[in-house]
Image (cartoon, rainbow, N blue to C red; front, side, top):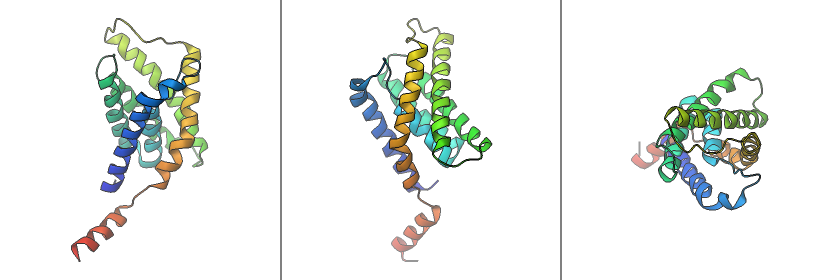
Amino acid sequence: MSRRRQLFLATVVVLAFILQIAVLPQFKLLGAQPDLILVVAVLVAVTDGPMEGALVGFFGGLLQDIVGPQVLGVGAFSKALAAFAAGVLKDFFMTYSILLPILLVFLMSLFEQSIHQAALAVLGQEQLPTFKVTVVFASALYDVLAVFLFYPLIRRFRFDDKEESTLAIRTTGR
């Protein structure tokens, strides 16, 4: 992955994080809000591969963990695992349309919420967040809506290594 792509994805993660904590709490439906960090991580896993998606999920989840009330690292773990799984699962599908990211974001949203809850329980968190089926499904559907915002952005700004090497040649004069 090129340096420009890394900087772009870091910017997208920070933007998603800011939207997640500052704007989206005012737009809850059925007690749920989308998890933009998870959406971005899954979309990166679909477009760039499982390792890249897991890294985005880990660092985005860590940002959320720092400001959240739960055990530090649980969100990073669950989002990295979900993004990695999405990156691996994408190879089992024959379509490369927007339906694939929509399906994977929906499934990984359900998976991530389950893993997150299970990890908190295993770690002995005394006050677990509520785990209502309606809220979980509402959140997953909300995540699917966020795909329409982030998927074109992440697909549009793909920087090739060739582009970066051309830029380096121009700047060094060789």
